[in-house]
Length: 512
Image 1: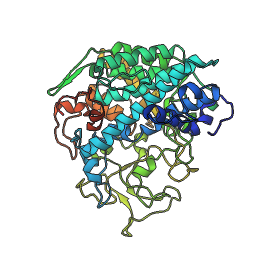
Image 2: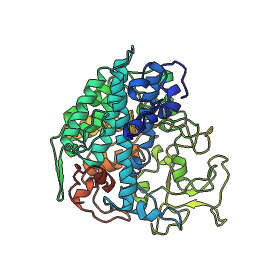
Image 3: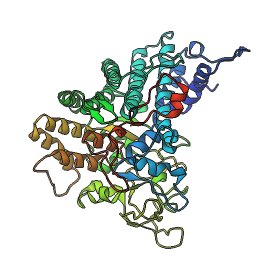
Image 4: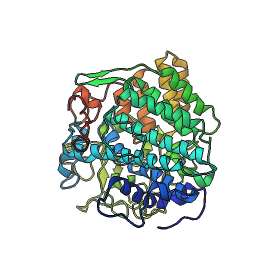
């Protein structure tokens, strides 16, 4: 077992936290009836001091990186913002990518068994890791144990937030015991997360020092809560085969919680909007809840690989993810936020030199995709919101990914104020964001629900918010490019058949 030097830095523990925790999880999942290991690692005999506890905590944080595949992809590709077209022999993958975009998943379909099941497993793995360490902490004496417990409860709450978002009601598990459990209702999961986050935010620090950037804070807990209150009608509602019966609105709570962040004095809007996404963005004053990355093997952000053409970067990217023409064309040409898209003649992102496609012709990205089942190499504008790290290690870039940043908090407040009839307050919040991306200024004169949804598109493209937004605005199931009108129950994902087979107490979501 590799030991860490004694340090309070979660970054130092981050590289090895998964290795430290994995044997513990394995011991919980597997039981030998014939022999007793002589060097078994369990929560009772491993988490004995600060170094070992921080290693375990890093293992829980590290699971956040895994949410940037299935959870992220389903949140984006199932919407009018992103698509992964089939390009010759590339990106067919048993049809699952187009199945996601067309919202045609099922409990045992290619996307259901791969992507939907992956989102379930990743979140519950994070919850299991948090539960193991929370249990072990009861037998450890640490000066900062209350803070670590609060971090773990917030991390566990965030993983539950993702499950609630996708699946509705899921089993609430607070112990490390492995056994079949029935589903709680979606409203019960909402209440559990809310209670956990409110308790944790009273203990979490307002900030961390530079060595611990990325650890959760009061702002992190409040950002999740503000988003939950914004989506409360959906998150506490009931979904049947015929659709959603909304729960109670929590608009006032969304405003109040957003204000806790906006008035905290901890965060501020970056003057240069694009700096929030560069490889140096760990210093961004906007970051509230981030997935921390390093330009080191296995620890980096790989968004450049998903979007760029094979010849635009080293190592060769995957030339897959594209935005849709309607999303690209919605942006005003003067809006600096439109600069995230690659369109027209292309260059290598490292050398700046023009590049060709694989047939030897100049590479040109077009806004339109004529046929998503047989797209060319250059069809579809690409989202390069997180540009390559000049010091990248292979596909690993050091850009942090913010699930919540201050720009979204302004949008949450604006929408909640609008719903409460405070259009002047909503306009003020929206125009605060627009002021930094238009020269000369182009403030909005009026605000409507459609205006707010568009402003969220402009500010948050590629940030895993679009699915939630379209559901909240009753537009998720409507037709858009390469996708027809879908059934009302598809605002929830199916419970993967793999999970129902493993836990007979689970019941499938309506319609599936």
